[in-house]
Image: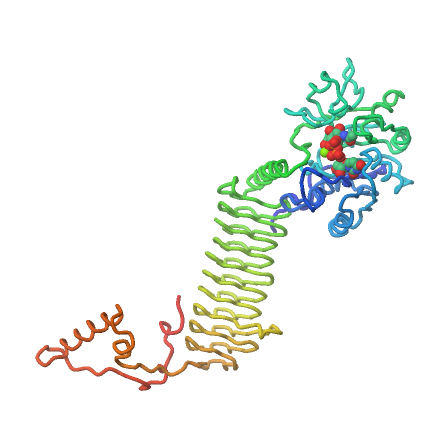
Length: 525
Ligand code: UD1
Ligand code: MG
């Protein structure tokens, strides 16, 4: 079985009892600087949306309830949540009056919430489950009223600063726009991830003011409120500040994507997968790879893709929701929703579409497109073909430029090619039609009727040669000149005394088709 590094979050200790937990994800903001019709939290990042990453980081907490505050693009966000986290409750914040207001609305939707409330900004996709778990553990062990995840960052611009007193205790969290010059010099920032005691949070949220530069209810003010009331508030510092990076525009999104790529790629290499060029290899967090799989440069593995042991994928390959069996090779190709059997070979330049299923050791070669079709064990479709809605038996050979004509303009129909059948080049198989086991089809045929097992199907028109046609109809062309030279040479060779025996060309309909379509006639290897 292929290993799954990220699809099922691992490593985080689930400490679900006796604490009841509620997770609140803040995802109502517009994300103005993304300049997008898509709400910010729905932007994709290596296999999940931003909010999908946040929910995955919180998943191991096994919270009793997950509330997602939605606002901008609420319908789109709700629809996405229904798909990826149907257990989460979306709660509408019609007007974005601040992070404190958002959490207040979330708690109104969870009136019975007790224990720990974990709040996470919806735009911190690099957050690891382990880090959330460590924050919650520290918070619960300390029996704190509120704990904020902080990080020391090289550039704190735009972020809330952690202001500590002379004893190093948290005094307040101050937004950059409300900060004094001295506070702005602080490089310890609020990551936007918190753990609270539900009752004390609820109480403090009721006391928030909007007396700040943005006129919003700041969740961060809860810390100063609780602290000055003598409640224990704490700071949990993240080991790696990269995890706390938020996403505000597409430049930051691209930077996050590179950081996540490096993390994912390093993890796979450490499990025994070869990435020949990690800088050009993009693997979604949902992909699974087996030991000794080899991924060559410029390759994207996306969605539910699985690559088996010893398989070689790339260079220049995109696989989406595609399963590649052990020992298979896929070279310079694009596949979506396909299955490539053990030891099978794909490409260069193949296109596998949904429900393309290649059995063990099958071959789909150059400029071949396969859709909704089975290619049997050891069967070959080596060049320039379209295989749509077909079943190709084991060890069948499909010659170059064979088209499975599956569509009559209204309906799609299936073609079956039996085991060991041999289809000549440049053939149309007009569905619905069946070529029996071991049958042959002559090159250049248009097959609309079944070919029985072991028969030869042929629809080729008889050939006629019109002698001298080029000289008459294409005089003065290079072809005419070449033909004249060849004829003159022929005549010299056959002149009496030349020593050559007299030959006779075969013309016209002497033979309607050759008696057997030898391999050179019908197929290519
Ligand atoms: C917030 C923090 C700041 C911290 C930073 C980390 C506050 C007041 N400030 O600032 O200290 O350093 O995050 O990234 O909390 N949202 C809502 N409803 C609202 C407002 C915001 O759901 O009414 C959501 C947004 O969609 C976003 C998150 O809350 O996911 C944070 O909001 P944002 O406006 O980005 O806050 P920042 O100014 O970044
Ligand atoms: Mg922000």
